[in-house]
Structure formats: structure tokens, C-alpha cells
Length: 280
Image (cartoon, rainbow, N blue to C red; front, side, top):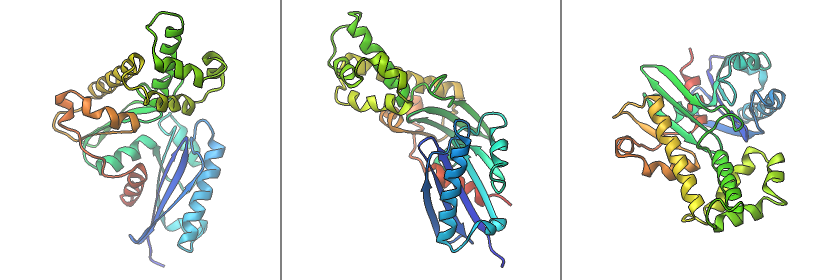
């Protein structure tokens, strides 16, 4: 049978998604569990297998039909040297594995040159100029992800301890954060995950005028501006800022950056499928 199967896969720490299209027809999407190929490669493999199997079944296909497929997988952790190649040996039909920031960029910019800053739970910066991709950040909560919600939540909680120590003026946000992180923030933080720290931003949202909230917002905005400068964003080219914090703070960018802002054209999953369709 003369046919073409295009498959895009988007995998991150919170889940994976698969988009499949046969001969350019209707796109079927399925979802699965977390798929970080560095922190849990076995779990990522299992999640992708299940989601991919469901997408194939929706078209009456199975794994044997992947010989006709062009697949691009954008997976968290794929930027680390050798990680993508090692994971591809688990699922040999994944001939093209890239970091999920690459597929996010392609989805947001639609193949154009430009810049993308993502400030979600974590953060990363990526730009493409004349076909050359440049990354910044995205190194995870322990060593990076500056400006992301987890980083911001940790900063807010740290500042709350300063209030408790009498080093900063009393602040209602500090009290709310301390109460949320029982029995004590230091003990709470021992087992907290990045998502737990990111959830603290919902509490901060109820106190937008508090001194701590203002400090944290200023720190995130500084990270955003410095990240774009370091990335070498070129004035006049498209600039997309995504993620909860990114979308909230993008209007506060300096005028020379704000004038380049545009809405994302699509999602990371759209970018993965777009890259798959570009494969020979």
C-alpha cells in the first residue's frame, strides 16, 4: 500500500501526547503518562508505547505499520549529550528525537526564524537564525529553570522565611505561604517536587500587591529580559513568550522587546508533527 504516516510526539515531565496523520488526513491525538527520558527513561518508554499504540489503533493500524511512518519526538531531556540516541535504542522507530524545546519552538514559530521564551513550571529560551538553533537554560529545577514557576515559588518561600526572621516587613503573603507549607517550610521542602513549588504561585496570585509578590515578579521579569538578551534576540523578528508566568509578564517587557511579541502559532505537539512531515 502506498501511504504516508506522519507522527509527532511531545513528551515532558507531566505527560506525553501523540499526533498521527495518514496521507495528510485527519490528525488523531492521544495522551499518556510522563515522558522525561533522563529522569525516567523506562517510564517514558512505557508511556509513549501506550499513547502511540492508541493513536495507531484509532486508524486501524499497529506497530508493524510504523515502517511507513515518519516520526519526530520532542522529549524532555533530549538536549543532554547522547540522551536522544540512547532513548532511540529503546524505541527504534523513533528515528528523529530532539529536545522538547525544539518542537515547542517549531510549533510556536511555525518554522520561522525568531525567539521563544517559555516560563512554565520550568523555563528555557530558544532561538533560530538562518536555520541555526541556539538554546539557553532548561537544565531543571535543581540547577536552573530560572524564571519558571517552581523557581519563583521557591524564591517566594525563601523571602517568607526572611519575614519570619524579622529581616523584612510583615507581609500577608508570607503568612499564607508559611501556613501552606506545614509543619515548617524547611521540612516541607525536603520532599517537595518542582510542581509543589510551582503551585505556591497560585497563593501568590491572591496577594499581587504584597512586597514579596512584587519582588518575585521583578526577579522573574529580570530573568526574562536577560535571557532574551543573552539569546541574542534580533529586533524585528518574531518573539513568542509562553507559559503561565511568561504570558503574565510579557506585556511588561521593555518596548524594544515588546514590539516583537506575537502569539504562538501552535503547540509543541504541532511542532513535532510539522517536523515529521518535513522528513523525507
